[in-house]
Picture 1 (cartoon, helix red, strand yellow):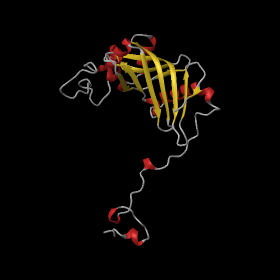
Picture 2: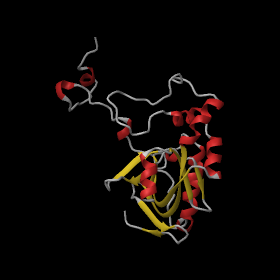
Picture 3: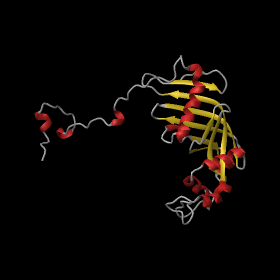
Picture 4: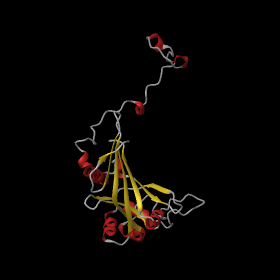
Length: 234
């Protein structure tokens, strides 16, 4: 058995009770390495380009921190309704941001009633946050919606085969996975039955708020899309 006073005999002084050696600092409390600043006077004019380049990368990389942003709509009771979605497509030229949704979901009804929405993106690796105000619309049978459906994986398509409308209350747990598809993806032929429930949220960005966290001082840039960015107090 280890001697509980071994650290004392080695000249170690402990402030912990009963002479117990103090715990080492956890990884979350260790100093974080400084990162090269992304928001500087030299890069200010190119902030909008930086935002779209970052989102384009996040769209393709499912491990990127911004691949699963939050989208905020306004619920029927007037309260904000946030949820996490998967970033599916971005286009800098049209300032477009796209995610997929079940056409029966609450967010579809909320956007059709109130198209003003907000996006929240954050990458813990770079410690950069984007808040984007946008106008959104729902597309079901448009060429863009059809293209997004064709690009969807079979495992993703399984979500749209759910037989119960999302948000339906139940006395028992509902995974809403079709019977017989637990643990497997549908075949291509099976998946086509979900097309009727598939829709996309197409949002046009209006204003962007970029925040970069840094131990030496946070930095913040705001701009209306297509306009010159400016510094803002954090």
